[in-house]
Length: 256
Image (cartoon, rainbow, N blue to C red; front, top):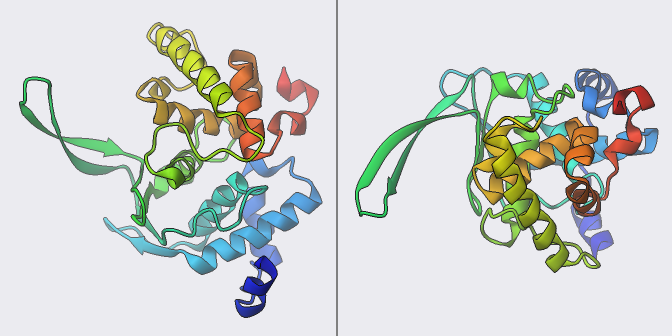
């Protein structure tokens, strides 16, 4: 059936080699991909750019380099997954910098609170858009553990089975009870450690299980040695989920 789909829907043109190589050179987290992986990444990213629409907001200016950086990193997540993983939605909204998002919640006493959050990225459910700050996109992919692109696209994968709750649809052969056991234990431990600054992982991961999954996805690809050292079981779960082994791509001195 996939063959028939490709027959009736021809592949879009590939990203030109010079553009692709320049974009890869600006993203150190792609340094260790093999030639075959880079070829696959180029194909997936080309399809991504063909099927997604970029909308500019807040005075943002169109920039091909930013679009390529987003496409390559989004495609890295699904390098060994279904290349149609993002098919249920289309729009990516770009702001030049962090943006304000009005938020309303009700406390236990029934009092409604209105506030405005400052965000670098946001993922809407179902067919809703993904929103990114260009300034934060440009600092992503540098191998320092922080990556707003991977973070928000991880939320989109998490939401494939409904809510963003840190429990994405697992592949056949993965044990959902083991996933729940490992993530629940790690999340509880991290919340305690993060309160005292006893982790190299962004404390924002303690916000909720959904944010824990998204932040640890960042760490898995950006600084895999940190995740493996602090939460080896989670590294193994994400290795199965993403079907990648970023730690094996590092040189020995990088792991140290």
